[in-house]
Length: 302
Image 1 (cartoon, rainbow, N blue to C red):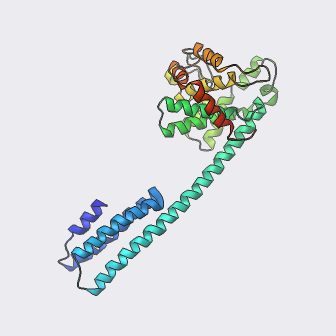
Image 2: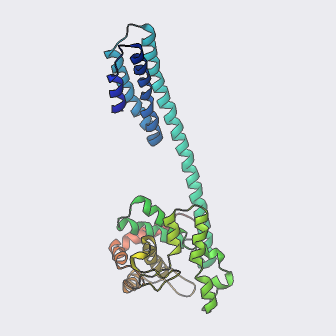
Image 3: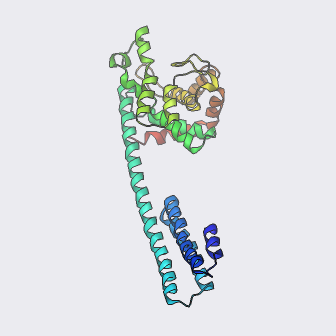
């Protein structure tokens, strides 16, 4: 805004060519209005229009022309500036609203798919919703920025998508798996990663899915990564997934208390889990974790 106004005010009008350039510079007043509408919608475009129209009116008063046609032209540009500001702002607000609706529909579809996957194995539609909520909470505690929190949260939500490729006879088997069956089961992180890469899921979310069974000591799968070589999203997920598994009822056992779950996770620090992530999990406190669990379970009916 300042650059355009300064340029317009500085251009002389002594010659016809200079006057033509001076008039052309006035058209640049529309540029900040359009940019503000794109970034901030109607509110931003109206504010930008108010500033630019004030500067345009001030210039007209300082250099009031005796030519009636020139005065009419300036008045027309002033009115047009306000019309453009209002219309463009409204259009961008409408477009943003439509995109928000599409995003919500997409999120609902993903959540429904995840719930169906959870029901297939866990007999509950809440496991993935809870681990996503825990992951977001812990990611914030660890200082991840909003974009990374969103990516790792999505990875946590979709962590088991690769189990679509696992036969029911293996996935739902009540007894111990054979070596061959374990090998099939261990393919699900890579299968999930391939699925998500095909549908354009953010890379950090897909990497979380690929590495969510890695261990801090390098004894996990599928790549045997260790320490900080494991993406931070997967290191966070490992802790919250263990917590949710311990504190949830399973067909073969009951849920343990928060204190027992915390004790088990603390014992795995440095081997199964990243010690820094474990420490951050301990810092959250039982009340915050329980509140997060209730919020996650309210997202979708069982």
